[in-house]
Each structure stands twice: as structure tokens, then as C-alpha cells.
Image (cartoon, rainbow, N blue to C red):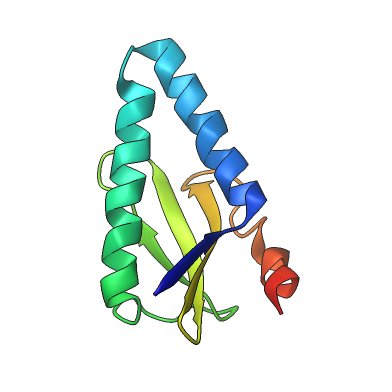
Length: 100
């Protein structure tokens, strides 16, 4: 499966990692690691999480209060957002239109 991360999602992850790194050395790196592990799981089991209203799926991170919103189109896994679980739900939903 091909994994594509929209630029906005990459910026969200980088911003969150920077904030955590300022709080404690190594914490930002741990966020990246957990996110990478979950994306690898999604690439293998992308159809397991339920399809949500709006046509996307999501996986919550275990340690950090973030989730990965994604869609699968053919053999491409599109990561639409790395979103905080408690802030502005679905603010990123229009990103689905970017990928067609």
C-alpha cells in the first residue's frame, strides 16, 4: 500500500511534536514514533476501524490525545489529519476534496 500524508497533516504532527519536545526532551520524538507505528498498522488493517459519517476512518493514538484520520482509495492510504482529540472536531474534513 502506498502511504500519502497531506501537507497539512504533516504540519499538524510537526507542530504537536515541537510542543511536546519543549515540554520534555524526547517526548516529541515519541509522538512521531507512536504515529508511525499506528500508520503502519493502518496500512495493514485499514478497513478495521468503522467508517465514520463523512466517509473517513480514524485511529486514536494510545499515549497522546491525537487521532489519525484517513481514507483508503485503491491502494493508496491518505492520511488527512493528525488531529487533537479534544479540539475542533472535523475541522480538516474538507481535505478529502483535495485528493479527489
